[in-house]
Length: 482
Image (tube, rainbow, N blue to C red):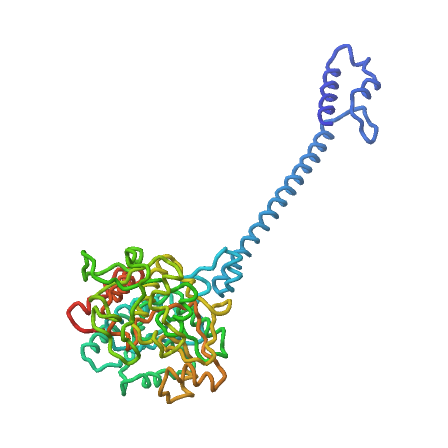
């Protein structure tokens, strides 16, 4: 339309300037060349009307451009709102700690460290580790695991209370040095030595106490968070216990879930045997080379009997000896000490150093191969109800208010894991995801000292937990600190 109007104007101008064409240019010619005008006045197509129409077109273009810009701005605003909403939702997920199922849907897998939303430290109560102290060499390992779990380092423990159950000045001096390494450590000297006295210090109503023996030589990074979260999730339970490697009860399950592997003590020292620091990695060990019909000989070892001498049946084969793996098969597992373990709090698994050693070597293998899931049993959340059976008190979470109303406590393991839960109808639960390792019970100590296991646990702690800190310095001066 605009092009027709321009052509008409040029035609009029050329006609008006012609000397001989003005009179012959009649109204018919104008109608043929001029565009249609609504009021039918075609005598003239002035510049004024053209400018008005151009202004109308310019307004139309501006309105169209404004609409396009508004549409783009609206889409951009909606995109920004969506991004802000998603960011706020994700922030709330990390701040409030949405369920693992939700996060598995959102992120594909739930994280397993202290930065995970699962492990946001709960508020409203205090969490205190209660350590039954007396053996520095074990504690030099435990120290690294506890520091990793301190609240000031992103963990759950507000404080660690060291309950000194020793009158050895050397051990007490070590404890004084230890508590000076962090403000979160506090030392308490018991009025009377023994298990019973520590519970008098665990009576604050709004504090969750985690009682830990000083010879716990491995604590999985998620063990304490799992224990605390299960304590909150199961308020009707009397206490929540960890899943202990080297317990006469849980090892029965571990042997059936595939966590315990076939190992036997090496019969004689290898040619290049050294007492220097070994690696913790089980993959460095050669396979055991023996006749196919060999089975482990416990010798005369029975409850209450002394350990056979080194080299005798049932005794350690040599000092600082190691254990070697057999090819994995049900038949080979039956040749090893764990096949003699029973579900009995005071059975052979409580007295046998060999059953303990096999479990520890199996743990090293499972850590290295990332097969820690093999230790889990119970319901879908890994919770096992002990049904009032007695369980070991090596690593357990209990509210101070539950301790306070049940003082005095005499046989703490029997009362806190069996008698009181039965009396109150509040069972002990094991969180089987909270895997920890207990080095030895009293009857196992002598044989366990002849293995290289403690050095292997020290190597594991130094590499994985202690951030390069050497944990063996205290005992290298010849002090008997076990």
